[in-house]
View 1 (cartoon, rainbow, N blue to C red):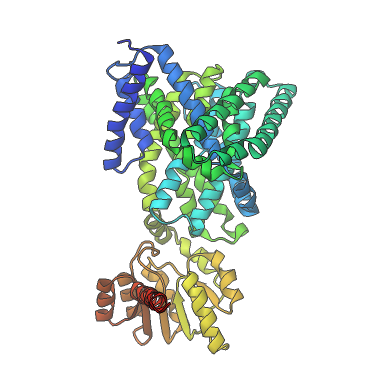
View 2: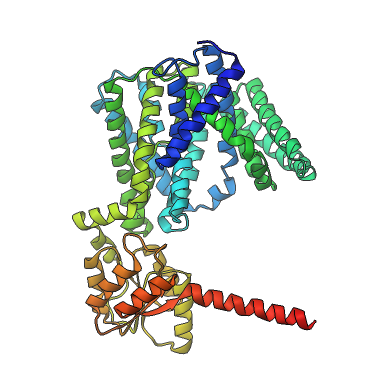
Length: 546
């Protein structure tokens, strides 16, 4: 069924809106809904509402250019530089060791007659993680500021850098000469320098001066994207690489946030087009392709753990944060779809590789929703099974008796130790926490760190040696993982029946429940609101007198 280009776009947006709503109800990534919309509309598996190959390719090309522009907008080179040597080292390991494991696993365990170049594409693609999906889930779980969250986001930032390097050299893979690689790198670097300077000294001033005119800002940013993309094509660098560079140059300009906000209204439109186009081009899928995708997901899991977990001693970060980081990095990146889409255009790979990567991306995205949401529960299960917590316990700094035992490290813990030490400098304060990285700030203010996993009763029992007279838990239910304040109090009370227990609560119901169980409860919401109300009343009285 042949339609005009405009009708095909309209059908794509209407159906993707319906499927995205369904994905929202099912709590799945919206990207999957966009791909399913393309499958429904396309000639391969669906009803064939869109069959014009030229329209499909045009939709794909426009969507791809804008997707790379948007990905570039989210890459902040300052964040990459400030992420630290530890994260860079872990990322290098994750990409390099992960690629080695994946390459040989695909070559020797997946019998599908892939060419070496196709194996290289598959290897690299499965070692890139979806920033879009992972960050969204971590934000929903309020875990972006945890150690595992920071590690995950830092690794994602550096993965983007490796993906950019791959794109820079991708065009010359069929003719792998050093001179061509050097030329591609030099031209990409030249384009990057020109774009950065133009964005900083010209574009940022134009945008800032006309920032109130939304239409002008949107038009200018789109024009800049196509300007750099066309310039890249003229220099012999791919148009897609030019779009990515345009986004990166704006992301690192003084007014990047202002521009991102202004163009966000059209961002999702073009992202939708790209993922719909992938579904449109999807041919009928056989059982062998599905089995390969499941095998690749197993390889992904093995490679993530094998390349990240061994660094628990080298980095001093402990097993738990690195285990959870490995789980968080499971879903295959949308960047992989960009790489394979370009690979077919350069005649490096067959369309079958695109289908395999797409299927792996869809399946890993669905599974990652559960892996990341239940990452702490999964860790607790394997910690008990494989005795992982014993490894972290060996790094504990103290086995001494404690005057005060604080369960968990937070900003409240930090201020509490400072206050207690100012009144009684010789008091022995021990902080039990699963994050080895917190041992240094605890030690700096006069406390001592010991390992504990509050979701494990056996782990809490090992704190008996501290024999504390007072136990304090400054952690709310939002922060606790794998347990809650009620369960934690019951565990602590059964192990330390003679100690005094001070717990915090955020609601009156929680306060009442903990009080009935025998805890001394500090309702932080009530105290904060009372203090704010006093300040408001004071301001009102002052203003009425004047």
